[in-house]
Image (cartoon, rainbow, N blue to C red; front, side):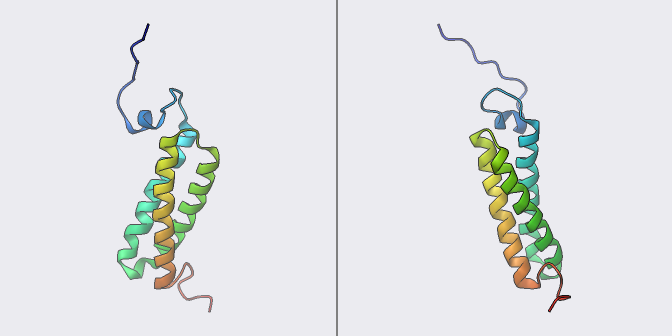
Length: 106
C-alpha cells in the first residue's frame, strides 16, 4: 500500500533535502556559494570593483569545492556547481580587470 508523502512547509532548504533528512551545514554551503557567485559575477560589470569580484570569486570557489565534498543530495550539488561556475567567472574577469591585489604586486 502506498503512503502519502509528508512534506513540511515549502522553502528552498526543504527543496534541497530530497532524501528527507535535514542537512543544515550542506544547505548553508550551497546557498552561500550561490550568493557569493552572484556577487562575484555581478561586480564584474563595473571594472573598478575588480578587488571585490576577485576575492569573492576566490572565496566562492573554495566554498563550492568544499561544499561538493560534503554535499549529500543532487539538489545541493546542482546549486554548488551554479555558484562555483559564477564564482569562477567572477574571479577570471576580476583578474582581467586588475586582479585581487589591485596592481600592488607587479
